[in-house]
Length: 415
Image (cartoon, one colour):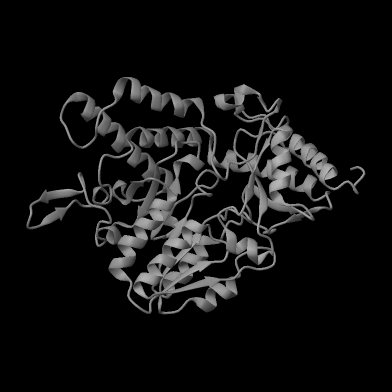
C-alpha cells in the first residue's frame, strides 16, 4: 500500500484522480487544508445507505428506522474512540467546526459568561474562531484578548501567559493553524489555562486528519472538527464536550428530538448529546464520517503523519531555493501545509496561472485576515497535502510555479 520512493500512497483509493487531467494538464490537487477528496469507501458507504438502508433516526420502530438509528449511533461510538473520549454522550454531531464553535458560544457563553469576563484567542485563528467570540463579547460585554505570534508565526508563549488571569473564562485556540501550519503545544496551553480556572476550546479542523488526538490525555474541555477535511462528506462535524459541562449547558436550538416533553406551559429537554441535535440530522453524512474515520484508522495516523512530513520537507526544500518566495510563517513544529507569497506578484495572479497549468491551490485571505495583516500581506497562496498526494505532485507544482514567475516577472530569465 505504501510506496514512499515514488511518493505514492493510496491515490487509487480516490476516484477523483481517475480523471487524470485538469484543463488539459495533469491534475495537481494541493488544497486539502480547505477540503479533502473522498475515497471510494466513503462514497460507497453513503451510496449504500441511500440506496438500500435509508430511514429516519430516533423516531420510529420499523426495521429501516431501527437500522438507521443503529448505524448513526455506531458512528458516535467511532468518534468517541477516534478522539479518546470517555463517553459517547460527550460527542455531538454538528454541521461542522464553525457550527460547533457557534454552539459553544451561544450555549456555554450565554449561560456562564458575564460582563467583564475575558476570552483569550491567538492572532493566528481562523475567522470561525474569532467572529463568534466577537459577537458574544459585544452582546455580553465581554473582553476579547488576543495572544501575539512571533516573527516565525509561532504562538508567543510569553504573550499568552501574560494575558491569562482570573478573569479569563475561556481560551479558544487552533490545534493546528490553517496559515502557518503551526501545531500548538496544546497540552501545555490547556494546563496553563486550567491553572487560572479557564475552560479551553480546541479548533481541531486542521489537526484531525493528521494528528492522533486524545481529549482525555489533553484534558481539553471542548474540541471540534469537520468531516470534509478528513476525507468525509461536507455538512457534518463533531463537537466534543466534557459531560459535566454539557449537562449544565442549555440547548441553542429548539425542535424535534431534543426534547423529552412539550406542552404549551413548559418544555423539558433531552440529556446531552441529543439536547444539542434539534431536528432530523444529517444521517447519511454522519455515516460517511464513520467511513472516513475507518479509512484513516486503516491507514494509521502514524503512517499518514510520516508520509505527509516527507511531502512537506520535499516541498519546503524546493521552494526555499526560489528567491522570489516569501513564507508566511516558518514554525518549527508544523503540519503539512505551506503558506507563501511571490514577491512583487499578487497571489490571485499567481493562482490563476497555476490553475491553467493544472495546479489547484488556495489563494486569498485564507479566512485568516488578522495573521496575514500581521505579516504585511492582504492575500497569499497556500499548498496543503493529503494521503493521495505524491512527490510527482510537488515536482509538477514547482515546475509550474517557476514557469509562472518567469511569465509574470519577465526580468527573470531562467531557473
